[in-house]
Length: 484
Image (cartoon, rainbow, N blue to C red; front, side):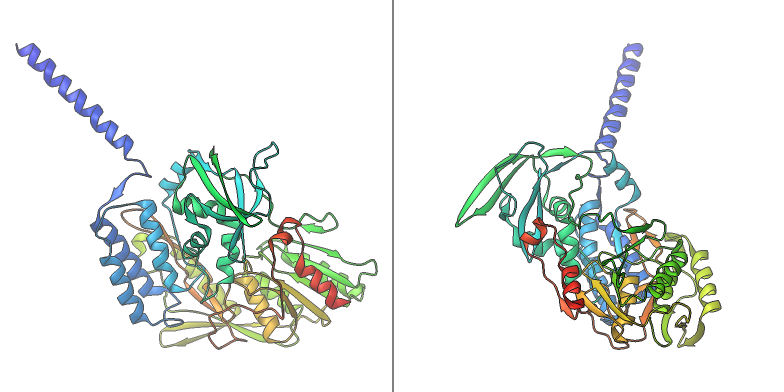
């Protein structure tokens, strides 16, 4: 009897062990739920960090507004949520800061788990244009005539596409009250956004327009780790000379070399000085009459790089101010990299004039025109909703100094400046979600008034679905017309 008892006890232990192991295994990064108390603690960290350091306070809304607002957000979490659902709600809360550099990212654990899995995707690739959704391409290798390219999509799985667009754009944060940036990013990311927000079904039911009738298509999803790339941008031009590390390329539009196009993909931190020297030397040697700077889809980058470009173009010295109200990162138990912040403050102090006002340190940097190979002829700048951060900085100084003609659409970065400089990540204590938090306010001194909007084009350009299908370059076509 004692042997049987010991055997039964051992069996019960083994069963309970594997039962517990099974439950732990099932509660993965996607299904694990966090209690209301844990979620509220994480929101408390966001509130405290925002109030302690975020440069947007007082720009578009007052400090007291954010104190009250994040207290109400905290109290709204009364149910347990998964990390995904919690992050989506946090993104809506962060949007109130009107800062494109502030972001809420999944935990590292969640990302690692995602990278191991395959997800359902639609084999049809949709593109939003002017608040409507169209079929751009099919990922099926065989010819697929179910839905034709360019046909308008009315609904996906019973949800009207215009409602999908409105809701999805709420999760995209831009500077100020800008909407072109939201339109731009949803255009390039719609096929991921709507699935992430509205679910990933095994079967898609799509309503679409064909002539005057509404038709329905039903087709299965396909599984993949990521959505295959479908080109939305312009075709590669083999005539461009590429500076890879500098992330820029150039070409002359004509045999006489009177018009040069300089496309800056981002303001890199490498080799940009050599690139600019060669390009502006060429402009002088060829007596080029027109310079076209393409800042479309340029998400920003190095301040030093953008200052260098402006030094070849501005006719007189202009200042830019970077300010911060902190001397070290607050709540350092949740973040790292404080030494980098202090080094950056020290570096600014070496190259800029420091002025402290009411415990806020202002670093005033002077952008001085270069004498050698300075370019003082006609400049055209191409911009769109993907022009952000440092590219908007360059656009603002050229715009408000009447130094260029702008073609395209409003930038997603605000004309008056942004919150950036350096952006540490705060890791929330329970969900381990990461909060990207800027430490400096970057002020474009040429635009001291708060506009809440980006740089406006002198010649607006708007694409239709036919332009996308034909992969036209309407901005460049307009510049050529203006030059002629």
